Length: 270
Image (cartoon, rainbow, N blue to C red; front, side, top):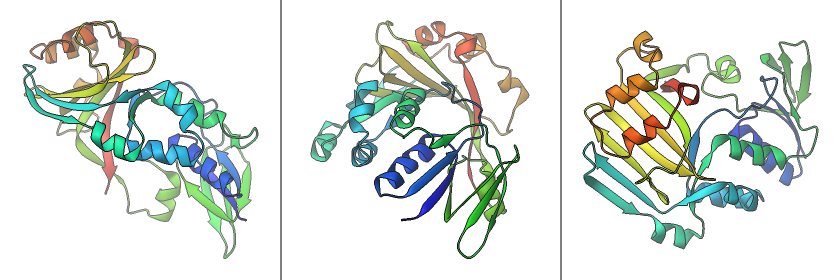
């Protein structure tokens, strides 16, 4: 069996570590952050992702921390239905639900499933060197590690990818997004499906996650990356911007605090 190094302890890195361990390989995961904090908002795991988690022995741990999603609604800014997709026939055939889950809950369950000592925090990659049989990773804290293979799971701005493929750079996708998770209890919120509203002001999505929480996202087109005006937006600015959108969007924003907001431009890879 082989010995692997994984750079990045996000969802991809932790899931890959579990898969490799189940195959009998040696695995060490190195994460730049000094601690794994509860950052991020919601994610939707498709039924195929839930099947993959079952193959990793993680379905029973992840399923209770999310909310099954049985429908997808596309609405206009007045709340009129543009399209509705019932996903139950598909998920029934596959035998797994689509699941809305908070990213921190998913990451926590993936981390909990790994043996102690697999994940090493506070190790930010500096560079790596390869031979015909091994790869050695050097970290900014002076540590180094050697194995037979290196897996890059360090995100859109991966230092591993940058060294391997310097021409492959993040590319601004032309829009920016705010996200938050709030406590439910607002009339009219979706409880078993997602909705996305399209209007002249932008797009606004609602996704129920576990424990009575709702994940929402709001996206605007912006020709300029890192737009200083949009970067400075707070809840009150979003309330003004989406004031014409149907209920319960104004109520969701009213239940959000500035401390809840996560903002970022969207990028893909060139």
